[in-house]
Amino acid sequence: MNLVYEILASLAYGAVGMVLMVLGYLLVDLLTPGRLHTLIWRNRNRNAAVLVATNMLGVAVIVSTAIYVSEGHFVPGAAASAAYGTVGLLLMGVAFLVIDLLTPGKLGELVTDDQPHPAVWVNSAAHLALALVLAAAIS
Image (cartoon, rainbow, N blue to C red; front, side, top):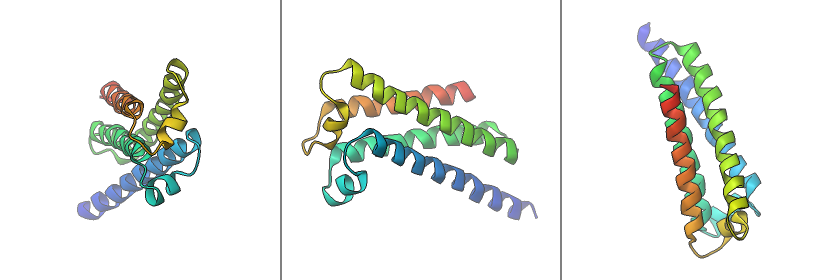
């Protein structure tokens, strides 16, 4: 019976993580001009792919930390994963906007540029850094 409970809990945690990653994808899509689907899969845009990938990695860091610190308590762990994941996405969105305000040009346009741009790496690093800070705050 314990194995069934653990499998169901794992599926639920996975569902929370996937929902948050989809929300992260939609957030990046909202903050950048054009459609991410077209930019990444049709145009093979590296800038957009790097930003979305680091956003998803950031969400994974936050969610996995919330699960880890829940110490096997499923309901609090799932709630914390959803709550902290949402906070992380909000912080990543704010970081995108702040970096856009403090730097020359429009970050959204740089993300859609065909040529790799260092500003995307800076923003991606900010996403991962925020995720690590939030993960440390959770534990």
